[in-house]
Length: 196
Image (spheres, rainbow, N blue to C red):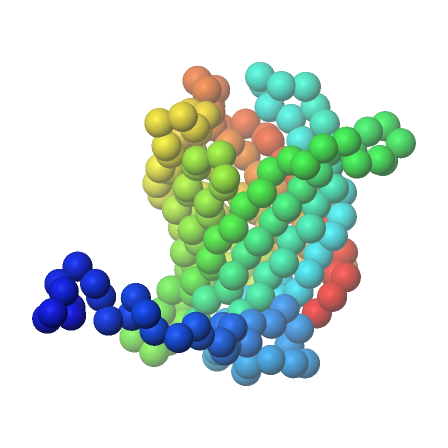
């Protein structure tokens, strides 16, 4: 604190800073070196785009398109970002749909990488899910360990997700327990790599 004026911190009148100086990449050919603990997750790194089908007991089924970006900055975690949009019967965009950001982290036992993963996923609708998972080859199964939501968010109480790389594509299925309904199918999609 500034001893002359304790309410004025020393950085208040400091000069502007340059843009964020560290690189993040979804392409292993450029950017920082992949942290060794992420070697088992390497097939997921990239930009993926494709189509899916969604539904839940309280809503009508719907078709959607989605883009998922999985990147790293050289540290022992992956950054996950997903954005989706609803499609009409002619595959035309109707409106924006779900968005989500999060981080996937391998669990270490000392210096040894285990097949366990932790994932934190957050939505702009006020729901944050902590997932615990296991990786077996290119298959990842996650289940919620905790769900935290804002006072105005939809009542989501649990979730499960299955990811896999199959014939070069990213496939996933997501189940959700919400608004009084038990764990039920919610989303599934097939995405192809478009970058990385």
